[in-house]
Length: 198
Image 1 (cartoon, rainbow, N blue to C red):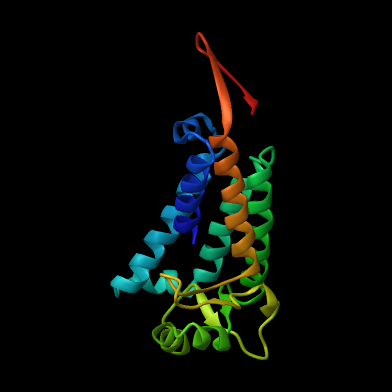
Image 2 (image 1 turned 30 degrees about the horizontal axis):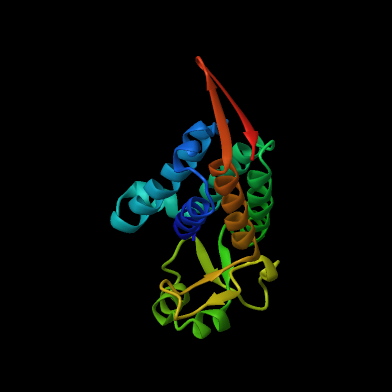
């Protein structure tokens, strides 16, 4: 969803008079926290799914802590950029996603009915078999299921999926961040860059 949001934001920002090059003037505090969290999740999931050694077993047995750690890094990074209204909204959305993870063994609960509505039967089968480490099927014992992946986006959307309330807020925040900065008008004076809103 992040990829679609960024693409749509750039397109609409351009169509409404924004400039893509203005994004280069956006400075993200603690950017390294986002990089670390992204790499930590990708690497841990790759090792757990593609290898069968002791490290894979350790990751599987401790994925709750790994997933929580990854989210905490993400939330810390967003808090460091609280000045940006777009990232404040993204922070709120990320926190809403974090809560069900925290209360459900580090896994995002997913609605079975939503999966069926979007005809995501392969994902349903994988989740039923417990083969997706980051998500789990919601049941009667699921805590804060309302904040889980319960909103179906079926075809004719190009990439059918299930999203959460938090995902919507994250997408909205990123959209505001990108479009706002694309539409800022920058005045360059020597080596100093100042901006004002059009």
